[in-house]
Image (cartoon, rainbow, N blue to C red; front, side):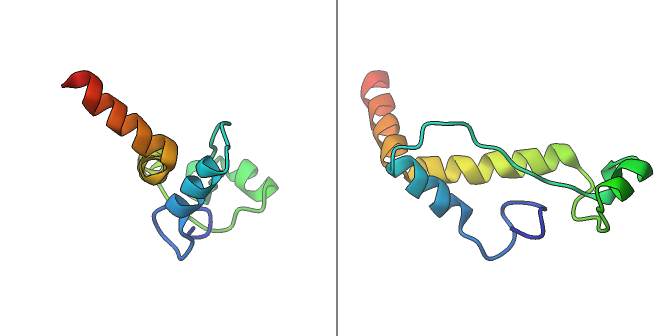
Length: 91
């Protein structure tokens, strides 16, 4: 992660973490915690001690997170199994 910015940035293998969690049996929800001074009211940003602008488009940040999480799902056992089943049922 790039300082609570886009999940696709940085050095942590988020798709790998998603894959491993799913393969270990995780079935819960996924969430992303992201803060950027430019998208908060000044009082809120100061109150939360948000000093940097790591993103300026929350919608794109959410889309990026969905792509990264889906990439991990696609490589997980459950994701690969679902893809095979989809190919079988749509054939």
